[in-house]
Length: 54
Image (cartoon, rainbow, N blue to C red):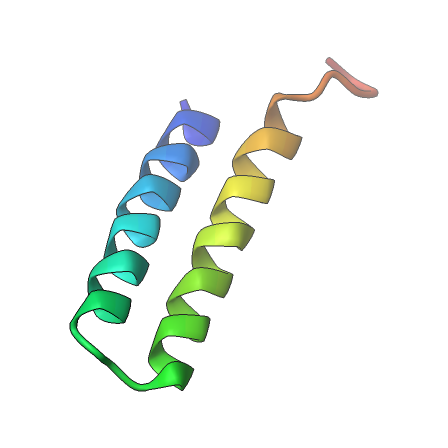
């Protein structure tokens, strides 16, 4: 369930990043939101990979 929630969060953050960019927000805000989106995506995908203890 958690990987799905992380991927949903990533989608919302990507949309927020695009919206901030289109509205002309500061570069720092756009990069920060984009970085959070990338981290949420990576976390969700890595959680889905099979590993030890699965």
